[in-house]
Amino acid sequence: MGKRLRVSKSICSCASPRFSSAPIASFSRHDMDIWTEIAKYLDGKSLMMLAATNKWFFSTLMDDSIWKFACLRDLQIPDSPEVRFKWSKLYASAFGGSHSYSFRQKEKHIDWMRIGAFSFDSPDAFLMENLICPPKLPTEDTVQKMLDSDGSCILHSIKTGIWIADLQLVRCPVCDLNTCDGTMQVLDARHLELFLNDGFVNGSWGYELVGSHDIKRHVNSASGGILDVKHFKSPYTADLFNLKSWVGKSNDWQPKAMVTYNAVAINTNLQDNDGLHIKYHVMTSGDTGEVVAIRISQQLL
Image 1 (cartoon, rainbow, N blue to C red):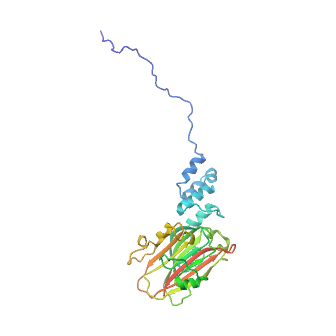
Image 2: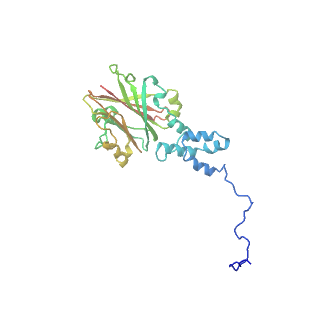
Image 3: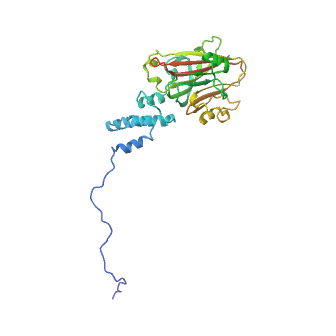
């Protein structure tokens, strides 16, 4: 005879939830909010590849707000005032691999590097050929007089907004000194919209020499800077004058650069020399007369 079960309860039915065959809400592959959020983590090339897959992605990912976010993110710069062109075109202009010598004087160009982006919040720029913070800004009435007096100058009528800065290395025949067989370094800054303007593309806008200056003695380095006068005393601009934080050691011959929210500077240490010839060029818009590009070029005497 078998033993009795010790439990007092009889066998009961399972009370756990039963599987339901009712339909469950599925993930929507075409949820605009989700893909807009995903787009924040994609670079321009990835955005274009995804937008090319079908019409829905194209209409979603070509929204200007997405490209504005990507452009400001990759330029590492705060928000910008209103722009004249679509942000997708501005992104392509900034990150498409073009620089100012890509359009003209190609045969004289040797090499370049992207420094970064900065902003002009005011229409006044301070240009300098050394990186020593002056006690006050120059006050002479012409650019040439300022350069002769202080080795720096103020430019007015700058187009406000985002600017991009590059360091260019070009052959000296681009200048007007026939005795130089070497190279010349150029701090090359331009407004973000420049390459999209017809006046630049068709060549009707050109660079104009506004001043030059010679240093007729040995110099330790070729340096230059461009900054927004409005932010001359800001803490971010002060970082530019803290040379120990970014300028190379005395035996380091590689160019160095520094960019802040409202300023840019370059420095290249030099070996024995007899001085520098420095020139300042600007390009003005044929539409508004505003300065849309600045070059500070330096070559050994």
